[in-house]
Image 1 (cartoon, rainbow, N blue to C red):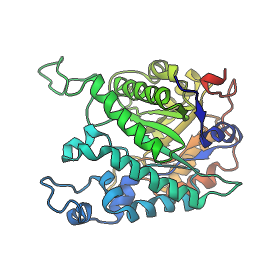
Image 2 (tube, rainbow, N blue to C red; image 1 turned 120 degrees about the horizontal axis):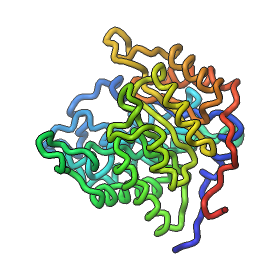
Image 3 (cartoon, rainbow, N blue to C red; image 1 turned 60 degrees about the vertical axis):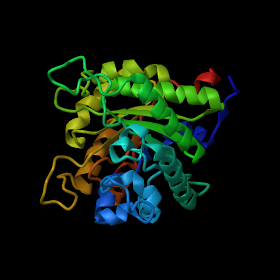
Image 4 (cartoon, rainbow, N blue to C red; image 1 turned 30 degrees about the horizontal axis):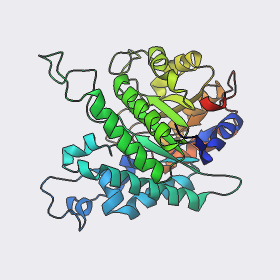
Length: 348
């Protein structure tokens, strides 16, 4: 194994111990504001592609990079400390649905570079900005059958997931990300494939980045889609020794508190992240969700006041307005303390 080389992400543990860090908001919500057409998504390069490409947001890093750059900069201007790459659906598995699987590595590399340029533009010695390489769950699940008549059926296996995530991680790191974020986890087996690929890449490259793991509770049962409680989910992934573990999307901040409390109790020695969506669908609101920036920021302020969080931000339906309000609400409050200092495994 190559000797481990640490990156600028090493600064994150100290930052999270000092104050609550702000993660950016929704990429998809912001893309929708541009009202892009099929032709906009295709650009010159994909004019004759045989499948529809509209709503393939990750493709915009190649065909409309200025759109993605503008979104990153809007969140940074709102006060985000960490921005996510435009790569939630940029695995080969997800892009195969558009017939673009072979471009997954290129998408991740381009997306990482766009986010890196934006973060560097806004960074100062007193307020560095960080880039999180986003790894989404893929549209397939390794634990659940896609056929209700055949419980044993699967449309993806562990090795396919591992290979897809390895390809994604390699490109993200080459593009300059500071940390990796496995997010919106609804199937822990998918997440384990991502964790395996990340560890494999770290061993092969000799470079180690901080890791954040974020699950999503799908309903009031308090479980992720593949059936685990929040506590069971944490015990299944804690071997990866993440910088932070958390919850995102799903129920919105108003319904997330008991599950965040459960996670904070289960993981007392790990930083906690929380970036909820903007509540329930509401066609009367500008974003289509019912939690305004004022509501979301008030709820996250309450989480911070309770000592539950170290990283907060927004998921589906949230905007730079949400992030600015969240930042203002939590800025005066202390971050959640740990029972031990975070350290990299090799530093023990």
